[in-house]
Image 1 (spheres, rainbow, N blue to C red):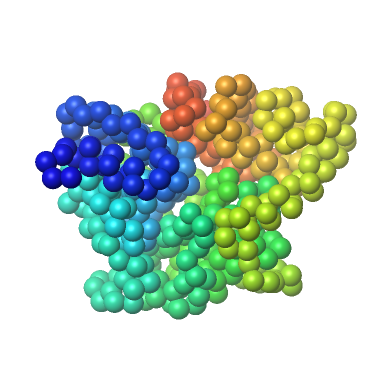
Image 2 (tube, rainbow, N blue to C red; image 1 turned 180 degrees about the vertical axis):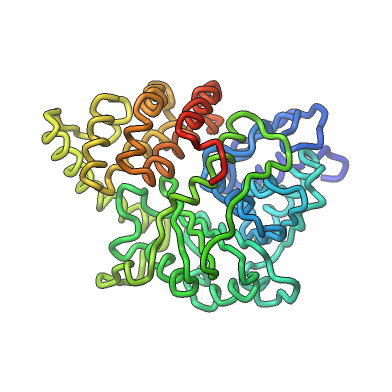
Length: 419
């Protein structure tokens, strides 16, 4: 690749990794979180665009590490193509990130992207090509203030993630007041991912065994576990550090509230009477998801019948039927049912593939936000509102114009100020 431009190198290296979507157009580069160069990379590992920091994906939650006051030195285990890096840079200009990945392609592309498109931040990131477990074993420097873990591979979790040795090494390399953010992939929220011997239940058990405090940040088929040892997290503060654009700024404002309403879990609450070796591979997890799907349809149809509405054949019907979706969700909220997360999760997922016809969701949130938050504040902040924000940030949905309406909504709900 000698003599080729940086964006040509990125395209060439990405093409070696199989199916991906890449759009790159060189102009001039400013020293900020955004680039005037057109950059759009979408692979199984990362979604990155030049004009937004948050993109509606699970790694957006890693920005929580920067909401915490004490996070100056951050370790990221599992880089992908760098989609989680800019969220970690938002809150404080003095942050230093160590980014570790076993895949040399990931390190090469991430380095090229930041050198070319976000050069002001390249010096803040130390990219290391190494196995995460070996890195933790060999590390002898000052412990980290936050460790973000995103090690799920295309096929499964690395086996070492499911061992006590790994979590003991995490603790050894974390400051006493530090926090861990672990991105786990598995069953969607409405299918009770922490019950029935799932891989996410096993991950939760391991984290709870090693940390005194564990919170859950749900995001469709992902759960970000937030873990820490001390009595409570330091009081979050908002510090933008760098200028943020519309929806990025709103999302960053909401993060402290996402923390406030995050569900706390305890080891004794993670029922293991049905414990088995958890399904770990993507195929096994999908099979478990489909095995639970018929029960979900039955719950929906029973609830619709109770509300005097006709039944459905497929869950997807609800995404484009505002009347049924709204009435069903409010019924399930009153019943305090886990299935109440179905509609926001469904809408958030469909926004990536079939966004046309989903505009009603903003209207619903705008009209009924106060009532919904009163019914269940944790659900509203961390599921309903969070998926609305994800839809708006999603570059495929083209709902950026919702930003002003959402800003008015969060202002009305008094969510613009830190907790």
